[in-house]
Length: 360
Figure 1 (cartoon, helix red, strand yellow):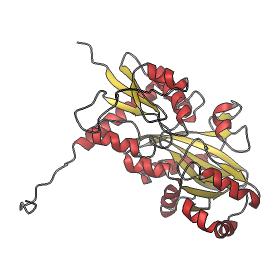
Figure 2 (cartoon, one colour; figure 1 turned 60 degrees about the vertical axis):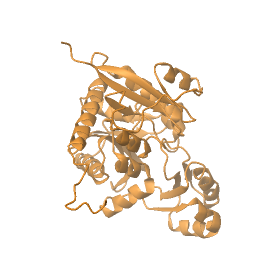
Figure 3 (spheres, helix red, strand yellow; figure 1 turned 90 degrees about the horizontal axis):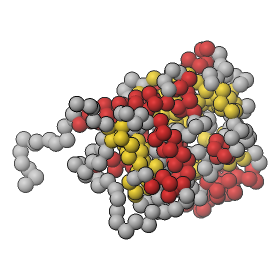
Figure 4 (cartoon, helix red, strand yellow; figure 1 turned 120 degrees about the vertical axis):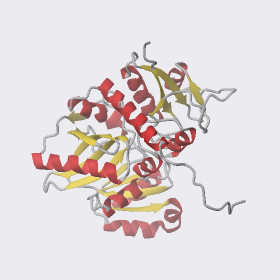
């Protein structure tokens, strides 16, 4: 008897500022999944949060349309309602990469690719993530942060406090990706409008001191409890920094693979990438981004991305391809890791029988 094809639900779209990036990532993944092994089930979420299962979902979302469904088409957050064998979440940013979706899939008892609830939440939160790096002794750029109510009440005080950071600085929403809402600020008078822009996308803002003349280095990590790191890649952005346009729109940014670094520096970066993956309790996949001073060779861990891009120019699949793992094989490995982790979690006890029935 021929082996049954695994049903792989590819989840895309969503209520996120990175909605459009998600669509392109999903299209790329669906093209590279081996149809001899997998039955691909497209699952789209429009910008209003409605779900649609089927081939029309991607087409409608790429056309900028909402589903306007009369009846719900979705998974239920309870075991036994599974329509697929494994989910590949490709919703970048909020409501997809920040632990919310992962919690839903845990309740539904559906295997899924990538980090769990806590790893996803921390991996998305630039502030908490950096606090954990500091506690673990991993160097990260100097930073400050504050919530929207504090800035509204005490803007002048916060702006004075930020003078402790040397200009230029990067002003970022605490919970977005793809450089959405990010500004590079070179003069103090530009801080306030940059903060207001960041607050459009999140209720908290992080301000990071820029690393002078850095090399932007990325490494792909793959695995569960024994993760491994790819060779390194260097990003040469087409704009002053690697903003949204430089990443996706103008097509002029360059990726140098492998990155031209001293052997010992490259080895240290790969080790730090694996350490960060473990410290944040990640799983499956992550892209870890570093800034390296060209003058001192000091290494700064910038951030991790727990659902990295899978578009044609994305570094995560390119780095693994250059490391000897082509795109279709990479997808096979990610699916196997998700199923293995789910089996491990299913073996854990979920109930406890006390000696006395004190609760009755």
